[in-house]
Image 1 (tube, rainbow, N blue to C red):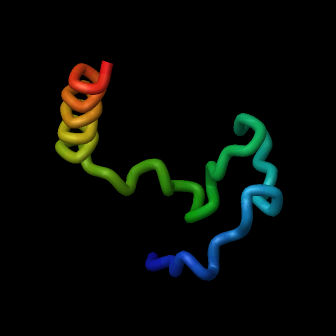
Image 2 (cartoon, rainbow, N blue to C red):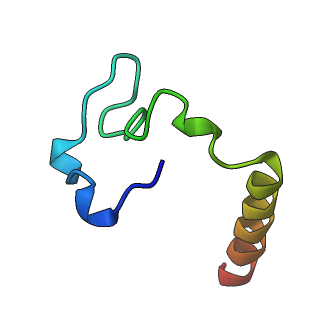
Image 3 (tube, one colour):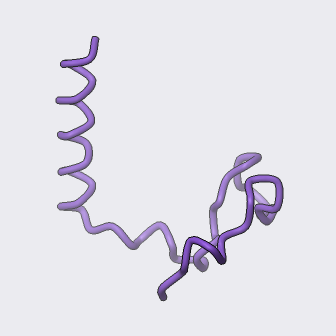
Length: 57
């Protein structure tokens, strides 16, 4: 599924999903949208975030 930035709702228009934290976008791209990033991508992002955080402190 491809979503264009122009088609995304504003923060105040995010849909309310039962069980989701207030203001979250859970389910915006479908019920399985949390499975879009493979484990290798999550590990890479975590490493990048940790490296960036340690150099900016």
